[in-house]
Every structure is written in C-alpha cells, then in structure tokens.
Image (cartoon, rainbow, N blue to C red; front, side):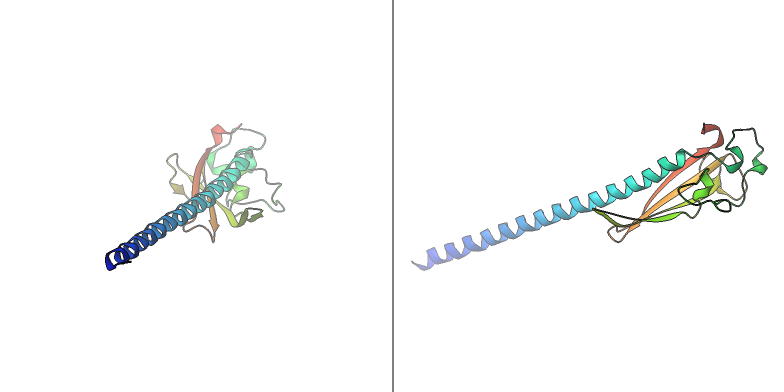
Length: 160
C-alpha cells in the first residue's frame, strides 16, 4: 500500500468517525428533548387535573347552597374551614396552600401546589373579597428545569 492510499484510508476513517460522532450526538439530543417533553407534558397534566378537581367545588363556603351574597360576606381569610381536609374540600378557597407529592410509576418526584387569591376579572390579585378567585397551580420536579404555573379565574356567577 503506498502513501497516497494510506492517507486516503486514514482520511476516510476520520470522516467516518466524525459522521458517526455527529449521528450519535443527534440521537442523544433527540432522546433528551423527547424525555424533557414527556416530563413537561406530565407536569401540565397534573396541574390540569387539580384545576378540574377544583372546578367541581362551590365558589365559596357561603355559596354552597347557591344564594345571593354581598362581596364583603365572602370568606376571609382564604383556606379550608376548621376540620376540612382533602379530599373533603367543598369550596374553591379550601385549596389555599394545598400541596401534594405525586409519586406514581413513570411520574416520580413531582409536587403540585395551589394558591388562591381574590382577583379582578383581569386576574390581578386583590386583598379584598370579589366575585373572582384566581387559582395558581404550580408543579415542580427535579426533572423540570423551571416550574410549571397554570392560572385559572373562577367567577361566582360561572359556578353551578
């Protein structure tokens, strides 16, 4: 084998090595993105599940038996009434400061938490009672680079 053929063989091997390295890197990157997407989709699903659960509750403790009520008669402070614990919450603000770990197969080490605030119709938090409650659900996990936040506004008049 002469020098020209040797250089050609070495060059071909180097080119094949670079192509192989780039291919492996692309496959690894695609797998990482796919895994990250699954983690975020799971987090969004967990947040949505909690919002759907909250949608089934009365707007306020004082509106469980639907009645006309003045804003200043709505619950303050927000949070569960004495003795109320999940899963027996009966109104939206019972979920104030609610938090639960989620550890299921393929859904390990997530934490779902919830904050409730009175708000205006645009979602701006307010300290006084209004006919709107802003729900902020947060999902965290060591697998998420940033937490997931989903907000939803409930209106007294939108509840059944």
